[in-house]
Length: 200
Image (cartoon, rainbow, N blue to C red; front, side, top):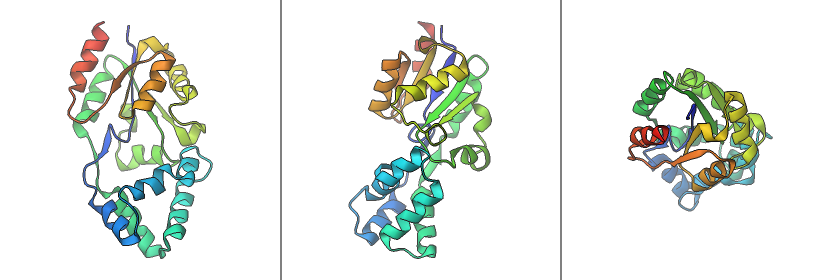
């Protein structure tokens, strides 16, 4: 029996709809397409930040130094980088509805500011019974320990939970732990797929 439904944040609940701000800075800085994401998320410093070994602010200071930006330019780059991200309000509403019947949780590879972002910027932290953030735990998906931390805090076994993520390697990591999974892509009938899984 399904007792908990666990969501990823970036790429599922919050998705980039407009890439123009990032593309503008890539062109200005002579970076390849998606070079901005490479710097922030996939560089060595980006991964250190997602492991909680440096702060979010430390990461952006490094980005500014790497790109030779003034404080004002860095602030604009940072603002433009996130400007195209849009919260899926309908999905958040669905998650709140699910809490009537299931526990809900969030597992995110994210920086040390995410809990504040969820609480104060988007005001959705209360939609989740458990929030597990890589920077707070020092572990990133698909490390099985991160899924086990969430399951332990939810008080349920892997086969009693569904995990939803947009990255295949994170889905594979969850499957290895024994979780039911949904590989999220925009436009899928998520509510219908969840309904089918909980009926099994």
